[in-house]
Image (tube, rainbow, N blue to C red; front, side, top):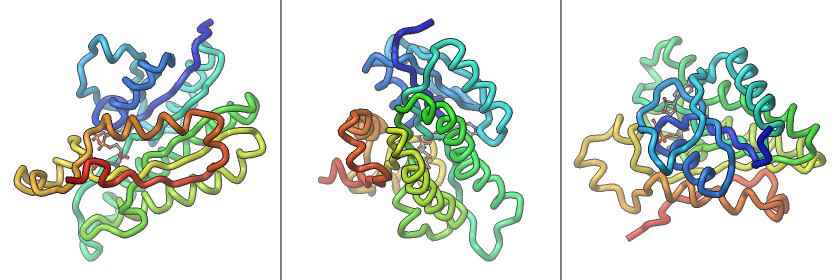
Length: 233
Ligand SMILES: NC(=O)c1ccc[n+]([C@@H]2O[C@H](COP(=O)([O-])OP(=O)(O)OC[C@H]3O[C@@H](n4cnc5c(N)ncnc54)[C@H](O)[C@@H]3O)[C@@H](O)[C@H]2O)c1
């Protein structure tokens, strides 16, 4: 059984999740990445286990966490980065599209947190980090299911922190500003991307999780931290 600390990162196939998985590997964690699509190639900096897992499916999440427990004996860090965005209007969005976004961004995050909470409350240690969004605070024109899901993730983060604090488990949310990933580029033209002031790279978001891994961060349990404009010009 591994003696390394173990971390699970959802959405590790691309963008922010991939950068976080790589950073945790660099920090010495045995990382298990979950995704439904693997856009980033395996390289020297990206040595982590990749598991096909659709976070809408509780059974797949349960079996993935059980596998990690069998291999590593513990789960020290869970980062929920998997998510989808898009453009829809409140007046025309279909039931199916609404449900798809909420299922991935909210239910999927919750279902991973539930498995993490079961393990970490017994371990009496652990850190859960949810990648939320400033849109959850301020709204998003033509993005209501995205904004609603991210707002709910903030409430979920604070609720779980209240429950898990007595077990020494930290629960936090990071709210990245605009970050150069396929998700961002999927809803913007090249010209629009070029006009973003202070565009983050995924590695900037990965930097932000490191202070949360320390037990000192428990003083801020439930914190929802905006890192927008890190690279403001
Ligand atoms: N890029 C930004 O500007 C930005 C800003 C704020 C918040 N975020 C959030 O950051 C997180 C990561 O986004 P990103 O920008 O890196 O996007 P991305 O598209 O590069 O990565 C998201 C990953 O989630 C995976 N995913 C989607 N549905 C899934 C499912 N059902 N099960 C498992 N994996 C699934 C995708 O396959 C993809 O690899 C998202 O939650 C997003 O909402 C991004």
